Length: 77
Image 1 (cartoon, rainbow, N blue to C red):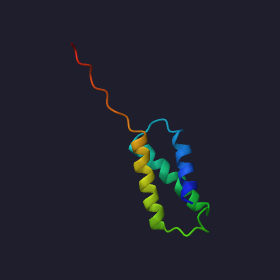
Image 2: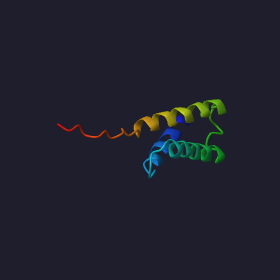
Image 3: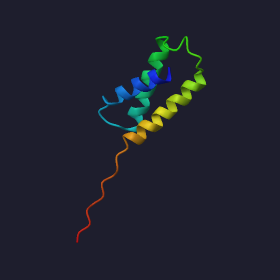
């Protein structure tokens, strides 16, 4: 179940137009909630607490992957 969640979230993350905290959080919630609603985890020994923890971890990791550094002005010599 966790690999399926990770694969789906990672693949969908490439389609984001912008990598903001809101867009990443929304994507992770949408993908995993959809999988839950479709009954993908009915046969898996996974709890709602586990799923909540997994979602938080995916959000944290995706934010780290897509984090952009701010641009600093060039120093004049």
